[in-house]
Image (cartoon, rainbow, N blue to C red; front, side):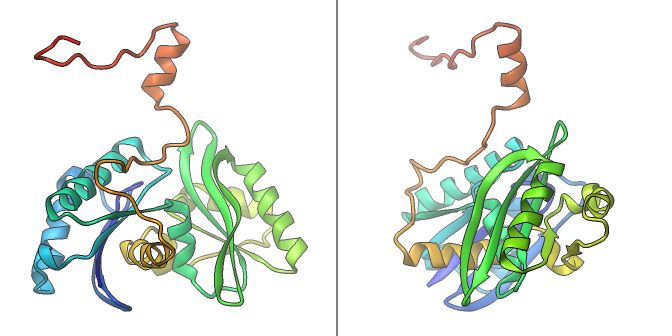
Length: 249
Protein backbone atom coordinates (compact mmCIF):
# COMPACT_ATOMS: atom_id res chain seq x y z
CA UNK A 1 0.00 0.00 0.00
CA UNK A 2 1.40 3.39 -1.01
CA UNK A 3 -0.29 6.46 0.42
CA UNK A 4 0.21 10.05 -0.65
CA UNK A 5 -0.26 12.41 2.30
CA UNK A 6 -1.18 16.06 1.69
CA UNK A 7 -1.17 18.84 4.30
CA UNK A 8 -2.14 22.42 3.42
CA UNK A 9 -4.63 23.44 6.09
CA UNK A 10 -2.61 26.33 7.48
CA UNK A 11 0.77 28.03 6.99
CA UNK A 12 2.68 24.76 6.69
CA UNK A 13 2.67 22.89 3.38
CA UNK A 14 3.70 19.24 3.38
CA UNK A 15 3.57 16.15 1.18
CA UNK A 16 4.65 12.60 2.01
CA UNK A 17 4.64 9.05 0.68
CA UNK A 18 4.00 6.20 3.13
CA UNK A 19 4.63 2.66 1.87
CA UNK A 20 2.93 0.25 4.28
CA UNK A 21 4.64 1.30 7.55
CA UNK A 22 7.69 2.96 5.98
CA UNK A 23 7.77 6.73 5.45
CA UNK A 24 9.59 6.89 2.12
CA UNK A 25 9.63 10.66 1.81
CA UNK A 26 8.30 13.82 3.42
CA UNK A 27 8.69 17.36 2.10
CA UNK A 28 7.61 20.12 4.46
CA UNK A 29 7.92 23.90 4.18
CA UNK A 30 6.77 26.59 6.57
CA UNK A 31 7.65 29.75 4.73
CA UNK A 32 6.09 32.72 2.96
CA UNK A 33 5.19 31.10 -0.36
CA UNK A 34 1.58 30.18 -1.03
CA UNK A 35 0.41 26.59 -1.25
CA UNK A 36 -0.54 27.17 -4.88
CA UNK A 37 3.20 27.69 -5.53
CA UNK A 38 4.55 24.87 -3.39
CA UNK A 39 2.18 21.91 -3.05
CA UNK A 40 2.18 20.37 -6.54
CA UNK A 41 5.97 20.81 -6.97
CA UNK A 42 6.40 19.07 -3.60
CA UNK A 43 4.27 16.13 -4.75
CA UNK A 44 6.14 15.86 -8.05
CA UNK A 45 9.48 15.96 -6.19
CA UNK A 46 8.71 13.20 -3.70
CA UNK A 47 7.27 10.97 -6.43
CA UNK A 48 10.42 11.46 -8.49
CA UNK A 49 12.83 11.04 -5.56
CA UNK A 50 11.23 7.74 -4.53
CA UNK A 51 10.80 6.48 -8.12
CA UNK A 52 7.08 6.22 -7.47
CA UNK A 53 4.78 6.31 -10.48
CA UNK A 54 1.41 7.96 -9.71
CA UNK A 55 -0.29 4.71 -10.75
CA UNK A 56 1.40 2.95 -7.80
CA UNK A 57 -0.53 5.05 -5.27
CA UNK A 58 -3.25 3.17 -3.39
CA UNK A 59 -5.01 6.14 -1.85
CA UNK A 60 -4.58 9.80 -0.95
CA UNK A 61 -4.81 11.00 2.65
CA UNK A 62 -5.52 14.71 2.83
CA UNK A 63 -5.75 17.08 5.76
CA UNK A 64 -9.46 17.87 5.70
CA UNK A 65 -9.78 20.83 8.05
CA UNK A 66 -10.43 22.95 9.91
CA UNK A 67 -7.94 25.58 8.83
CA UNK A 68 -7.36 28.24 6.21
CA UNK A 69 -10.15 28.34 3.62
CA UNK A 70 -7.69 28.91 0.79
CA UNK A 71 -5.19 26.33 2.01
CA UNK A 72 -7.84 23.65 2.46
CA UNK A 73 -9.26 24.30 -1.01
CA UNK A 74 -5.83 24.02 -2.62
CA UNK A 75 -5.14 20.72 -0.86
CA UNK A 76 -8.60 19.42 -1.67
CA UNK A 77 -8.26 20.36 -5.33
CA UNK A 78 -4.91 18.56 -5.59
CA UNK A 79 -6.25 15.46 -3.83
CA UNK A 80 -9.48 15.36 -5.83
CA UNK A 81 -7.73 15.85 -9.17
CA UNK A 82 -5.17 13.12 -8.53
CA UNK A 83 -7.68 10.69 -6.99
CA UNK A 84 -10.11 11.15 -9.88
CA UNK A 85 -7.41 10.70 -12.52
CA UNK A 86 -5.99 7.61 -10.82
CA UNK A 87 -9.32 6.11 -9.78
CA UNK A 88 -8.30 5.79 -6.12
CA UNK A 89 -10.06 6.84 -2.90
CA UNK A 90 -9.42 9.81 -0.64
CA UNK A 91 -9.17 9.50 3.13
CA UNK A 92 -10.22 12.78 4.78
CA UNK A 93 -8.01 13.19 7.88
CA UNK A 94 -9.13 15.78 10.44
CA UNK A 95 -6.35 18.35 10.58
CA UNK A 96 -6.14 18.63 14.36
CA UNK A 97 -6.22 14.86 14.80
CA UNK A 98 -3.24 14.59 12.46
CA UNK A 99 -1.29 17.25 14.39
CA UNK A 100 -1.90 15.38 17.66
CA UNK A 101 -0.76 12.19 15.91
CA UNK A 102 2.72 13.73 15.65
CA UNK A 103 3.11 12.75 19.32
CA UNK A 104 1.88 9.18 19.01
CA UNK A 105 2.39 7.33 22.28
CA UNK A 106 2.56 10.47 24.43
CA UNK A 107 1.27 10.18 27.99
CA UNK A 108 -0.06 13.75 28.02
CA UNK A 109 -3.36 15.28 26.98
CA UNK A 110 -2.61 16.75 23.55
CA UNK A 111 -3.98 20.15 22.56
CA UNK A 112 -3.17 21.17 18.97
CA UNK A 113 -3.82 24.81 18.09
CA UNK A 114 -4.34 26.66 14.82
CA UNK A 115 -4.94 30.40 14.71
CA UNK A 116 -8.59 30.90 13.70
CA UNK A 117 -8.31 34.72 13.97
CA UNK A 118 -10.86 36.93 15.71
CA UNK A 119 -9.50 35.87 19.10
CA UNK A 120 -10.23 32.18 18.52
CA UNK A 121 -8.30 28.98 17.87
CA UNK A 122 -9.20 25.82 16.03
CA UNK A 123 -8.50 23.13 18.58
CA UNK A 124 -9.45 19.73 19.96
CA UNK A 125 -8.23 17.48 22.78
CA UNK A 126 -6.64 14.05 22.32
CA UNK A 127 -4.81 11.28 24.17
CA UNK A 128 -3.20 7.90 23.67
CA UNK A 129 -4.55 5.20 25.97
CA UNK A 130 -2.98 1.77 25.83
CA UNK A 131 -1.33 2.82 22.58
CA UNK A 132 -4.69 3.71 21.01
CA UNK A 133 -5.41 7.21 19.73
CA UNK A 134 -8.62 8.71 21.08
CA UNK A 135 -10.49 11.99 20.84
CA UNK A 136 -11.37 13.64 24.14
CA UNK A 137 -13.05 16.65 22.52
CA UNK A 138 -13.81 17.18 18.84
CA UNK A 139 -12.32 20.07 16.89
CA UNK A 140 -14.05 23.43 17.09
CA UNK A 141 -13.40 27.17 16.90
CA UNK A 142 -13.14 28.46 20.48
CA UNK A 143 -11.51 31.34 22.42
CA UNK A 144 -7.98 30.44 23.48
CA UNK A 145 -8.60 30.94 27.21
CA UNK A 146 -11.62 28.63 27.10
CA UNK A 147 -9.68 25.89 25.29
CA UNK A 148 -6.78 26.12 27.74
CA UNK A 149 -9.27 25.80 30.61
CA UNK A 150 -10.80 22.70 29.00
CA UNK A 151 -7.38 21.17 28.39
CA UNK A 152 -6.29 21.76 31.98
CA UNK A 153 -9.50 20.25 33.33
CA UNK A 154 -9.20 17.18 31.09
CA UNK A 155 -5.59 16.69 32.17
CA UNK A 156 -6.45 17.07 35.87
CA UNK A 157 -9.23 14.47 35.58
CA UNK A 158 -6.74 12.00 34.08
CA UNK A 159 -3.76 12.84 36.27
CA UNK A 160 -1.81 14.04 33.26
CA UNK A 161 -0.07 17.14 31.94
CA UNK A 162 -1.03 19.01 28.75
CA UNK A 163 1.24 19.33 25.73
CA UNK A 164 0.34 22.10 23.28
CA UNK A 165 1.35 21.90 19.64
CA UNK A 166 0.42 23.15 16.16
CA UNK A 167 1.60 26.14 14.15
CA UNK A 168 -0.53 28.44 16.30
CA UNK A 169 2.04 28.16 19.09
CA UNK A 170 4.28 31.05 17.95
CA UNK A 171 1.23 33.31 18.32
CA UNK A 172 -0.14 31.89 21.57
CA UNK A 173 2.82 30.48 23.54
CA UNK A 174 3.26 33.44 25.90
CA UNK A 175 -0.47 33.70 26.58
CA UNK A 176 -0.67 29.96 27.32
CA UNK A 177 2.18 30.32 29.81
CA UNK A 178 0.23 33.08 31.55
CA UNK A 179 -3.04 31.12 31.58
CA UNK A 180 -1.39 27.97 32.96
CA UNK A 181 0.97 29.77 35.36
CA UNK A 182 3.90 28.10 33.64
CA UNK A 183 2.57 24.51 33.80
CA UNK A 184 2.19 24.02 30.06
CA UNK A 185 4.35 21.66 28.03
CA UNK A 186 5.14 22.56 24.41
CA UNK A 187 6.05 20.16 21.64
CA UNK A 188 9.56 20.61 20.21
CA UNK A 189 9.91 22.36 16.85
CA UNK A 190 10.38 19.16 14.81
CA UNK A 191 7.11 17.68 16.15
CA UNK A 192 5.08 20.84 16.63
CA UNK A 193 3.62 21.67 13.23
CA UNK A 194 1.53 19.92 10.62
CA UNK A 195 3.26 16.99 8.87
CA UNK A 196 2.03 15.09 5.84
CA UNK A 197 3.66 11.96 7.25
CA UNK A 198 1.24 12.08 10.18
CA UNK A 199 -1.66 12.70 7.78
CA UNK A 200 -0.64 9.62 5.79
CA UNK A 201 -0.13 7.42 8.88
CA UNK A 202 -3.46 8.39 10.44
CA UNK A 203 -5.08 8.12 7.01
CA UNK A 204 -3.89 4.52 6.78
CA UNK A 205 -5.41 3.73 10.18
CA UNK A 206 -8.73 5.34 9.17
CA UNK A 207 -8.77 3.52 5.82
CA UNK A 208 -8.31 0.19 7.62
CA UNK A 209 -11.45 1.08 9.60
CA UNK A 210 -13.35 1.62 6.35
CA UNK A 211 -13.25 5.42 6.34
CA UNK A 212 -12.74 6.87 2.88
CA UNK A 213 -14.40 8.98 0.19
CA UNK A 214 -14.35 9.17 -3.57
CA UNK A 215 -12.93 12.18 -5.38
CA UNK A 216 -16.35 13.61 -6.27
CA UNK A 217 -17.83 13.52 -2.77
CA UNK A 218 -14.90 14.79 -0.73
CA UNK A 219 -15.18 18.33 0.66
CA UNK A 220 -13.07 19.97 3.40
CA UNK A 221 -14.45 20.75 6.87
CA UNK A 222 -14.40 24.51 7.48
CA UNK A 223 -16.27 24.65 10.83
CA UNK A 224 -17.36 28.21 10.20
CA UNK A 225 -18.20 30.42 7.26
CA UNK A 226 -15.53 32.44 5.49
CA UNK A 227 -15.05 36.09 6.38
CA UNK A 228 -16.51 37.16 3.04
CA UNK A 229 -19.65 35.09 3.66
CA UNK A 230 -20.05 36.49 7.17
CA UNK A 231 -19.63 40.06 5.94
CA UNK A 232 -22.20 39.56 3.18
CA UNK A 233 -24.70 38.10 5.66
CA UNK A 234 -24.09 41.00 8.06
CA UNK A 235 -24.96 43.37 5.20
CA UNK A 236 -28.12 41.42 4.48
CA UNK A 237 -26.84 40.13 1.14
CA UNK A 238 -27.57 36.60 0.02
CA UNK A 239 -24.85 34.42 -1.47
CA UNK A 240 -26.11 33.30 -4.85
CA UNK A 241 -24.65 30.29 -6.66
CA UNK A 242 -22.52 31.09 -9.71
CA UNK A 243 -24.40 31.08 -13.02
CA UNK A 244 -23.55 28.46 -15.58
CA UNK A 245 -22.08 30.39 -18.54
CA UNK A 246 -23.94 28.22 -21.05
CA UNK A 247 -27.40 27.99 -19.50
CA UNK A 248 -27.30 31.22 -17.41
CA UNK A 249 -28.82 29.18 -14.58
